[in-house]
Structure formats: C-alpha cells, structure tokens
Length: 228
Image 1 (spheres, rainbow, N blue to C red):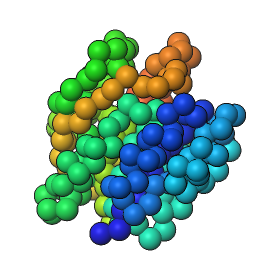
Image 2: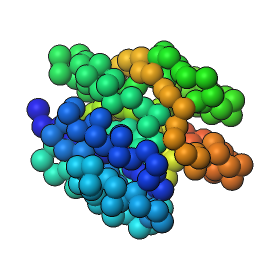
Image 3: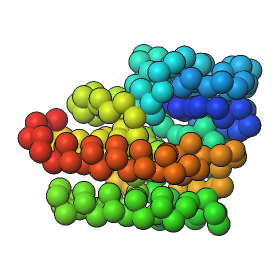
Image 4: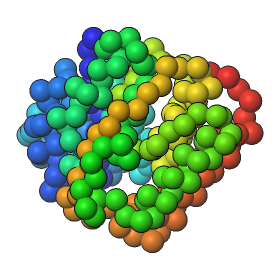
C-alpha cells in the first residue's frame, strides 16, 4: 500500500528538518504543504527530503487538501503536524489497524498516550473534551481526541467530500466518517512539547478562532442530513 505523509506547515523552520527526516522511513513520500510561511520552512523541508507544495492562502484544511492533491498515487494518507509534537516513531502503531483490515480511519489519541508536561494547554484540553462530548451526544460515537495525527485510506477519504478550509478540518473528517459508517478506531500516541510558538494555542486570537471553526463545523454537520 503506497503511503504519503502530509504535513501542513506554517513557519516551522526550527522543527521541520527533524520531522521530515524522522518521517521519511515510514512512507513512500513525505509532502510538506507550505502554508504561506515567511521563514525558511520550504527550503529546509526540501533539503531534508520532502516534496513541498506551496499553499499561499492560509488555512489548515487548505494545506491538507493541497497535500492530498499532490499525493496522487497514495493509497493511504497519514497526517501529522510539522512542529515535532507528534512522534513519527508512532506511525507503525497508527497505521497497523488499517494494514490489518480492522479500521479505515485511525485517530492518534494524545489523551490515551503520554503527554509531555506543558505540551497541551488547559484551553486545548478543555476545547478537545467539549468537542468530543458534543460528538458523542449528537452522533453516539465516542472519540477522546481531535488531534491532527491520523491515518485514512484513500478509498475512505474519497467518500467524505472534505471541504473545511481551516481548523474545522479534523472534526469534519471525524464526523463525516461516522456518517459514512467507516470503521474507526483510536490508538494511543505520544505528544511532546512543540518546537516554536503555537499558531493556535500560543495566541488568544488563535484559540478563539479555532474554537469558532471547530464548534461551527459541529453545528453545520449536525444540521446537514447528507450521508457520505
């Protein structure tokens, strides 16, 4: 099964080299979706061995979509962040349920894994728990995390008609996977302190916008009856 690791990145020059080099042994391609970085993220990623796709309009979902488009031959997509918080050594554990036919979407759960002290802020933990609670109440499916570290087969991904351009991407995927009756599971993955400053939890504006997009996506999907 041909695999592609997709890494959305915005100003991750400090971390991207180690992320790419540690991810390369686990996939056929590593694709960095350079989401309007103003530092040397793209250059460093290329030198480290990644294929770089330029995504000038900001938006986490836009970067993921561009990475998928670039991964034209991949049968399995793996998503992870470019800040070194996700551990590439957890990739075999992440994709194992898919390779064994037990799942079509696997979420790397930071809640079930080991979280380094200070890696998740209080607002991140609270927002994550609230979103998972709402999903359980509305769709009767229990998630513990909306973390970015995840894997999905192309065949399953193609059913979801993903469209969220920003921070609603992860929750949109998880909700639409429920609607599509995909086989979903979570595996514990470790989470480390990121290198550099978070563009979401590191600023008040980032926290507020992320919350609006995530809750807005839940609300939209709640009132959309379309099946996937």
